[in-house]
Image (tube, rainbow, N blue to C red; front, side, top):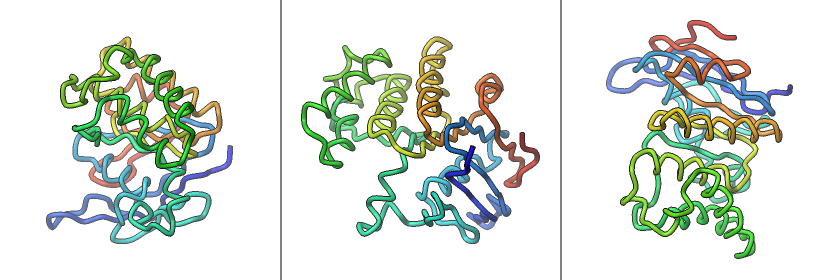
Length: 221
């Protein structure tokens, strides 16, 4: 499988300490890639760099050779930014919108026809057990429900790369299996999926990954 998303030599310092110390990461198209490690190892920071949400102090993150740093803030690079779907650990949903509206928003920004927008949002919310919650404000939903809405929102535009930070952390075993099945389907369709997880069972179903300790790669597989 060819590498689509690549991080090279990522270094990040914050609060006077090293958060990432020159980390490399390859995420092939069509594969699930895990980033594992204890709390504070730098997993979320690495995924923020990989998604283009955080500019590293040193090093690069590229999608098919195109630099990702700052891509989400540059209107001239909107096309590249839209190739990346992100599931944030804090969900990153718009609290004044309903579950359905949160999932529909990125599709509307891409100019899809209203019927297709509604169809995609409905199908994903239904798969994730949220059909009855579609018209509820996300701030009224539980943490697990919000996490599933965030997964639906990231998947709906059918990105080339999906970066997911602990996408199953708030879920019970059944919903964790549903989310992982959706991520596997995305990978099987050619998406480069990378997820941070502290769950060994989740890591074991991935095709490869890297284990971080104190901001550096301790091992990979």
